[in-house]
Amino acid sequence: MSGGFKEALLAAMPAVRGFARTFERNGPRADDLVQETMVKAWANREKFRPGTNMKAWLFTILRNTYISQARKKRREVEDADGALTGALSEAGRQQGHMALLDLRAALAELPDDQREALLLVGASGFSYDEAGEIVGVAAGTIKSRVSRARARLAELMGESGDAGLDPPDTAPLRPALC
Image (cartoon, rainbow, N blue to C red; front, side, top):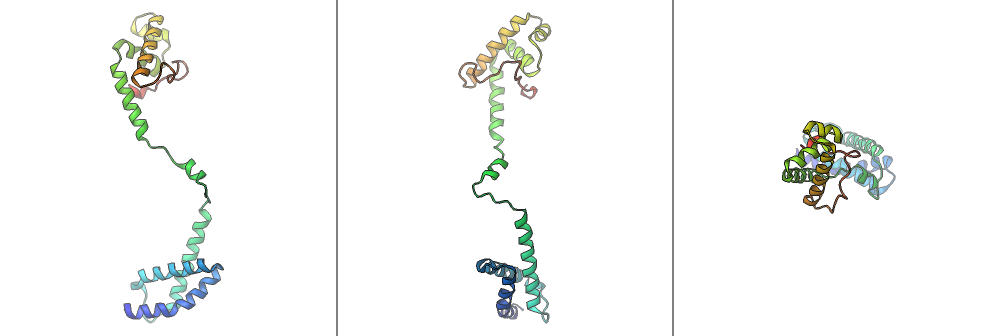
């Protein structure tokens, strides 16, 4: 079947090219449509029934290919400079995961009383007074422990001083850090 099919396919090509020009006025695009049609026809040659109209079969493939491409083109948005694509992309999650591991390691190095105070005030959102009541010390002691814990964390995390850390009342650490 392949030998006769090949000759019939080649013989129908001029008619297919003419039909493609009715859809695409642009010559190279019409040629691309013909090529796509021929590739699809060759890939599906076992579906062609000998004795039927080869041109009609190819015209159907061409028409369906054109309609599929037109539908696809309607859904596409031109993004020549990549601005839209850049806005859709998501940063890799491994950096956040690694930062979390670093934070956990740094928290583990803090003295127990400082880690406890920092987690109560920062992660759990308790006020200094509430944290003091929980631990059984004055609010000023909790403030001092949190301050020292933050300074030590900044040092362990490679930050200079207290610049990278927010005060407890404005941006508490998340409970997942425990």
